[in-house]
Figure (tube, rainbow, N blue to C red):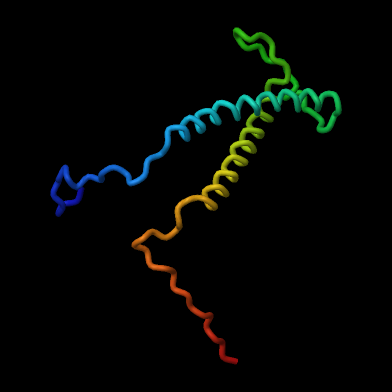
Length: 128
């Protein structure tokens, strides 16, 4: 609050003119749970397939077995963790790109009712 403004409860912003449907929050929460699970399952499959097919050489550090309490021994833990993170980045990036395309196609116009249209000017003529 600045020095010259008076505090007034009435000056606070009111409700938004739009409401977000609760289903979109549910879909976002579902994606936050499903994408990491799918990425982990895909990482396990990719690491196992890499062991059989030898697409990429795996360093010894990534092929170690790690003991996790209550889960037991997990083979190739570091490799699975790295591939899971990469697949999560790809999955969330894909969802973001799809969302941006849908929002651009069906979202609100870029100019509001009080905005002026952009000024169109011709390029400056160059003198030789």
